[in-house]
Amino acid sequence: MATSITHVLELTGEIVVQSTSWKFVPKERFNSHNEEVRFNLLGKRFLDWFVLTEDADWITDRNQRILRCHRLVQTTKDEAIIAELGSDVIKLLVSLPEIYTLLRDHGWGTPGVLLSNGEANIFYVRDPTGTPRAIFTYCDAVGWCVGAHHIGATDKWEVGRQVFSCAPASEDW
Image: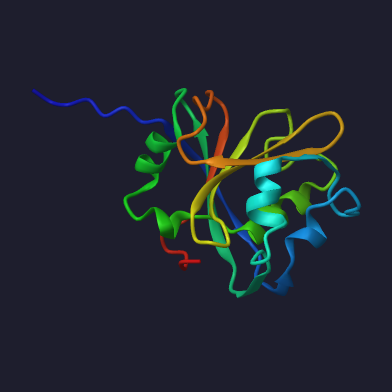
């Protein structure tokens, strides 16, 4: 008897995040005074894990990477999403500078690759200690909201949310 495989993700496209060569200091980018991105809310865990920690500076000197964009077709948890993305999840992780680049491209909530209708954009990222975390962004009427949680800590992500991962050929961060 054949086993039915249920997919939770539908690949909707790929985008190129241009090469960067700059020191990325999160506290200089993720703040209410940013003129490139209108932030409404930066969650406590996101700030603690990625912005306010002393190890938060990222040196970015890399070629462009291709990010894949997926739409959730089933309500599901992080573990099922990660399992479907691939067995070598570390190679699929997105970087904080890449997330910022996408937010900057949408600066004030303009339409584009990120959902800007109040629905979540989900990224799996290593924090400065090397721990994989889930970062989510969404845009409300005031601006972008950015939060983070332990992988598996959320109840479930709803259908229609968007998940970003690195294309398998991309370099490891």
